[in-house]
Amino acid sequence: MCMIMMEMTDFTRGKGPLKNTSDVISAAKKIAEAGSRMDKLGRTIADHCPDSACKQDLLAYLQRIALYCHQLNICSKVKAEVQNLGGELVVSGVDSAMSLIQAAKNLMNAVVQTVKASYVASTKYQKSQGMASLNLPAVSWKMKAPEKKPLVKREKQDETQTKIKRASQKKHVNPVQALSEFRAMDSI
Image (cartoon, rainbow, N blue to C red; front, side):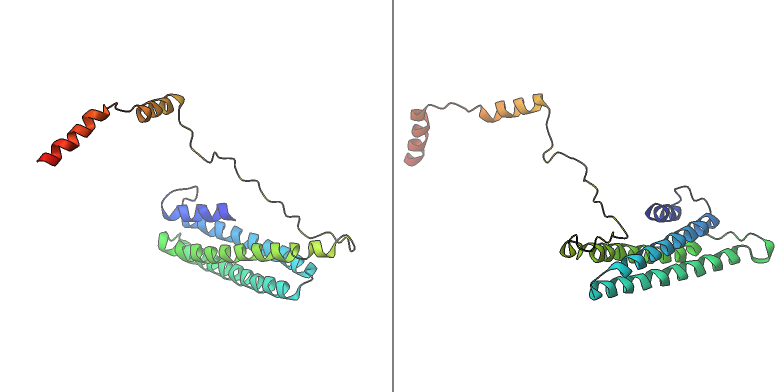
């Protein structure tokens, strides 16, 4: 869903694989279909949730997904009918695609909130139930390991050596000469 959404927003910038508004309309339909599948999966998770508060939160987010999927389907059908008005293809620009993109953005925000609520609903009480019930969850959650990146940017060996040499080199000044400069200032 995120990749399709990114392609839709790239269309507004004149980039990406979507070349005209009919491509944006078909992408909006794909996002709505994926949202409907997410709604079904979320309802399965809600059915297995033992906590009523988590279940109610999840069902509230699922209602938003259903609403935004319906809105996206209606907008895409209206835009498709407007384009094929009278058998002629009406060329519409970025402005007509913006309502589809906004509806898809609303759906994506609802999906993100639903995924968070689904994770809480399916894992919150899993450990407390223990092995007594052995009910397999509707979804198995696996966290993706983050990419390994160095904490500190490593410098080339030559650069570190030159920095150390410059910092460690001190100007050797005779202490008697340094004190004589202060005495000369006192007399002025």
